[in-house]
Length: 435
Ligand SMILES: Cc1cc2nc3c(=O)[nH]c(=O)nc-3n(C[C@H](O)[C@H](O)[C@H](O)COP(=O)(O)OP(=O)(O)OC[C@H]3O[C@@H](n4cnc5c(N)ncnc54)[C@H](O)[C@@H]3O)c2cc1C
Image (cartoon, helix red, strand yellow):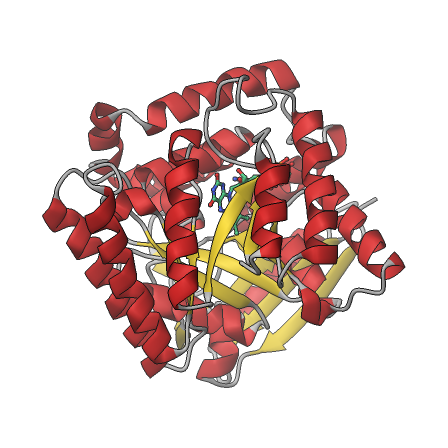
């Protein structure tokens, strides 16, 4: 039976710490699972950042705040909770603790039932196609982005709308031992001005990362830099970002988009890598062409991030079956580990990660030769475990207003995320009705 991990986090002198402890112990009294309970005192701002602590008292169940409040700043101040009678009080309500435990149980049951995401393959495939279709629909984008509730739910996957918010998330991740790469959200823009503004946003991001002593590493999409408008001005925009990276000693990763852009993306990555070696690119294991691309990039000493691929592709260019995509991922990861140049293995797939760990042990490949990469907000338990075991884990941290297509791709990867979101929505609504 899985252990229920529970933490009560308080800052020194918190008036509600004792009452929070009492209500928590009463809730845990009725739990059948083994409980791993800890009480943590958050003494200063840096501890607050490392625990993503947004006020005292905070209760976390299974590593997650029972009432996620992403827009409340990290810090040591007191925290208020909506009580059952609608008033605000300093003690977390019992119902919120019970709901968090119930949600944790649902997650466990879902994970045990189907490691592939808890939804049978066919409906999942249909839903995936639906989300990817929706990700390209401007009218749906307008609807979703103007909805306050949807916006607040996006916080699970997006570190904030502003660079300042993203920087806070980066500090918290660094305190937990993670490396990071920053993505300024945006893709498929429709004017040269927007493309140039996207490059400006990256330049500003690199300057802020340098000024705050944060990890100098960004990820960008060529369609955000104007690839669909004009290849040369797109390359010039990226070059501007790369020049700033050179000045600050940072790394620039060029994300990979759908297969119609693969050739241009690789060509621009090669051009810029020749000017500055700290430029890397991404290979998708679902593409049939990828073994040849990996061999070439290895020979050219270009750093590769390997992922499965997030777009809706025709069977003529990509493997339709998940099993083939996974087999391809395993093979390509081995090639990159043996012959590549500090590859980034980007996946949340535990079976593949176990395969990689067994492979590097057998081949005596140490943690200095590669890194794991994962998305912000996805499988945080696995992220923590790998870091605790001494591996480098880089978190892909997106920020900005243009979150819609990114968010829809995250839903497509795991339709069960929709359940998670609806659950939070219902919980939030209940809180509001009570108020
Ligand atoms: C750092 C990073 C950078 C990426 N860059 C690109 C890129 O440039 N181009 C591109 O096409 N794709 C990119 N991707 C996305 C990638 O292609 C996959 O779509 C995504 O990572 C899901 O595949 P997976 O390897 O995790 O395996 P899957 O088989 O899809 O998932 C394995 C398990 O991981 C968990 N999981 C996966 N995704 C989610 C999610 N969204 N929410 C919750 N749980 C989830 C589930 O438990 C699932 O069972 C990137 C991914 C990462 C981690």
